[in-house]
Amino acid sequence: MIRINKKFLALIESLLENPAYPNVITEHIFEAGDVILKQNSKVNNVYIVKEGITKCYLTEDTGKDFVQEFFGPGEIFGEVEIFSEAYSFCSIEATTDGSLFKISHTDFAELLDKNKVLNWLMLKSLASKVKYKAIRHSFNQSHNTETNLKRLESEDQNIYNLIPKKDLANYLGVTERNLNRAINSLKESS
Amino acid sequence: MIRINKKFLALIESLLENPAYPNVITEHIFEAGDVILKQNSKVNNVYIVKEGITKCYLTEDTGKDFVQEFFGPGEIFGEVEIFSEAYSFCSIEATTDGSLFKISHTDFAELLDKNKVLNWLMLKSLASKVKYKAIRHSFNQSHNTETNLKRLESEDQNIYNLIPKKDLANYLGVTERNLNRAINSLKESS
DNA sequence: GAGACATCGGGACAATTGTCCTTTCTTAAA
DNA sequence: TTTAAGAAAGGACAATTGTCCCGATGTCTC
Image 1: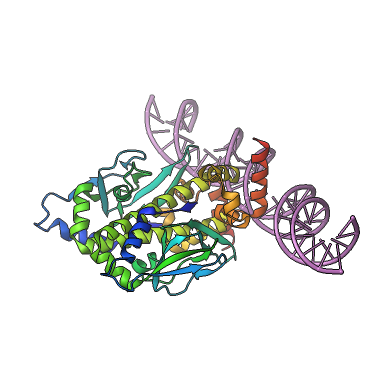
Image 2: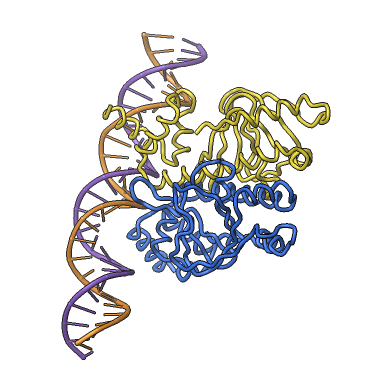
């Protein structure tokens, strides 16, 4: 639900201070609601969240938004487009205030080539995304909204304070109406 | 639906003949129905499909199977477990007869470290998986079975000959009964 | 406080999907 | 050809989810 990657963040921060790579990594702040990356736009940079939470979502032809994941500190986005050489397939929007690091694709590709630690952490990060996406999709398809919500609650007790209801519904792939029903029946059963 | 990766296959085949890496890559045949990898088991190798089709699926606590993807020539599996250092999170079963290449995790990690072309193709392969999983999950959640099936048909006209109905249903995350309904209403509307 | 306005939750009904079980189709053997 | 057995398809009903809309609640301005 809210992903973090402390090792990745630590490495990026250490590279920031490394004189061997001047002006490669820049830091930027964002405010809740800011659109950081737009679906179907050209991506020229990768971004690593330093502080705060961003929402990664995909807008369908039906107008519905589907939330892929919430990215917290250390999570990277805009990297898939380096390897798939295509326009962005999702949008990124700030859920809270925060800050991030930005690296151009060309610089990042060079870093990947030269820095074995980064290279390995990148492989780990991508593999982790593959894995949690697989598990999540499978679970969601195999259970009803109430069970899916229960799983989220057990992952993070604080979701109702951190994530707006609308986004929760879009993460579960259901309507707000249906999410409300699930919340009520969980309340009753406790 | 049925993934292939020609560049990856070509590279593995060239490594197979490379005298610098003796006995690292072995070739094995499989028959339809063979279980190649079992969920929750320790994984010590990566596998690259040479010929044929395998099914990657996850079994839920409810007993339902959910098919992640069908892997054709050049697709690799068992690699995520190198990076996540965990037991396999899905099973792999042969859908058709075929063959595959096998490389131990330690050998493969060494290859990733030494061979830049392999390293890059690995990053591309993982990124591609992240991308198509994201797009697929979003689409499936946002549309009904009929629309999801129509999308599959447009991807691959031949699905009904290649994939058993039961697997198609498990790929869409619905019951066979419901898949039949969707097939019928698509027939009527054409 | 009154009125205008937006937001949120939930009722009522419709559409979709799941479950269970019967019917139909296939295949093989006599 | 007939018959039996197993597999596949579909009917009937139940559960889940979506859509539409109304009323309650909160907020802002005057």
